[in-house]
Image (tube, protein in one colour):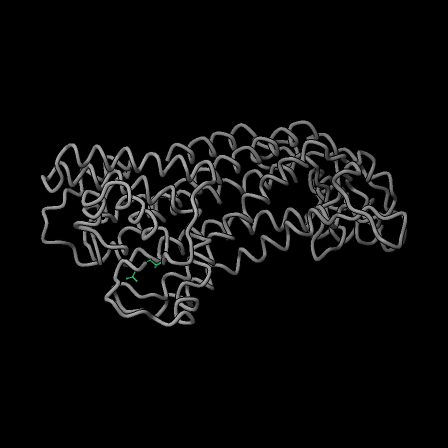
Length: 428
Ligand code: ARG
């Protein structure tokens, strides 16, 4: 059954090609189509296009459909083009003419938009919550291990003293940046597009303020063409937020993979978070973190995919936009799976508290020696040369006492300040 059935029947091949995997993807969005349809029905009642008993009947049936969706009992068979068609069919089957009235003053174009925006709001909210959980874990680990030193690297060459406190809280503070990006995405997504209909509004006196309030949107996308142009854009800005966060997680995972290598041996995870080899009995591989790295790298390609998908489309609806779903939905799934996995694994991380016993790391203290001479009045360049000479002659003896006291250094991690920054970001 096509909502736009004109009597002729399109080729099955055309149907398969144009619908693609959209029915399957719509199952994740159907819940939101129901929520928006309820607001739309109430609005139609308010402006007198439905009687109150018609609105009530539609609301009751939509609630029933909503609970079927929640129970996993909602299906979109091949005879229906999408979730919108199936839901309208169910309403019509159960309510007759009242069901046929639900589509007054709307189009699938604003219907799919509003469903996607409600969905993205929920997803971004979940991702924000999960990021905050990870943030708290990282801050707690930083606090716990602030006294445990490790080598810092530049060019992958042993460089200067660092600490697990500094390393863990570096990723915590990076998550604050990512929160700013997620907030920006949320702000753009949080504008009601419903009422834009096919993208040019309606001759019915649609009350868009009413549906905005009902649906909990912060504001509406007033201009109906701008609302329709949100399709693709809301997904894209969400993907920018995801990509930024993914960048943080993939680097963190890369560090973990590197530090788990025997050549580094800075940290380890219990066996349940590692995987074995089919041939080498000794292996404890970091597959978990390799896959977080890979998934997060894939997520960083999503803004590009969406950009290319919608790039040169003129204003107005185009079927191209349907394909944004198959790009953004899996990216959101992957992101949640990665956050969940990191947060599950992190509490059982073991850090090596004796890394610096290995003599190869003694040169991380070279700058400490230079700075000590500077404190005694030796000009920096001369002090640098003097310590360099000791290193060349093999007489350098590290002084392991550290005097890093400035904000953001090993000696003052500013964890409270970073916490406050995150708190402020969350209130935005
Ligand atoms: N499945 C379609 C999409 O996601 C729904 C909107 C269809 N609108 C239309 N005018 N054909 O874009």
